[in-house]
Length: 375
Image (cartoon, rainbow, N blue to C red; front, side, top):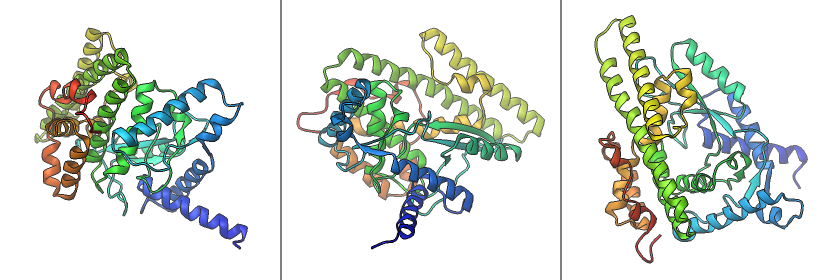
């Protein structure tokens, strides 16, 4: 029989391995590794089977209804979207804070390439995560002190790539139904296909599955009004993403010029202000909120722009590939796997910059109504 010390050590090693895999911790220092291991172990200990919560009379009715919806969406993900059928998202963990982790994104002052933190399992990734906000902000402050542009962003959920049974988190529950279900689909997509060291490819693939999945889930639920509203929001998000992408093109040209430091800095600030003004103008014209208010109020920087690029630049290419496969997810996944096995140049070709706002969305019918008998 294991002693209590042995049991705790094995649990700590397991949590450490998970935190290392999930957050790219190799070579990042013992203190960083320990905070991540401790935070991950707390998350593991907080898990409760959803079936137990649904059976418990004390479970609040609003939570009960959302967990029931997520159970149905979890089954839909496996049966209709071809996503992994495992123990992930069959448990619930209440952490009692707004985010599960806070990610730090950084970029040099005159570069649109994110800083990378490398790890043997995930490869190099474009962010570094902390379970405590103050730790994330302290690390970001150190990077800023050496001249980097930085961003600290709260994260509602993340994937351990199927190596452990990820729980539904209370940090996810403040979202609307479509966004909540989309988060589940997104994280399961990471378990399905993941390319070591290619954050842009991985995140955009997961975004494409999230968007196709939500459209099909809403259609299957007969929630046509919500589907129409959700598709409009996706189109608006695509338009805003285009504004950021166009701004990055202008900034890249500026950074490539042989300018003196002050002149380059002034040009950078003008371009950042132009992007912010364009986003504000679009918001006003459309009567919408972009969700980037905090960034715009604080002043845009390179870290903001590379974060948007990581998640959205490659999405149009993935969605065109899905449309080319007739909306059949099984064929789409096989094509993505082929790209994942191939050279980085082929993946980069899929992730060419957005050329038109309409490229960012496939036809709604393709997304929402797959061919009969397919996922």
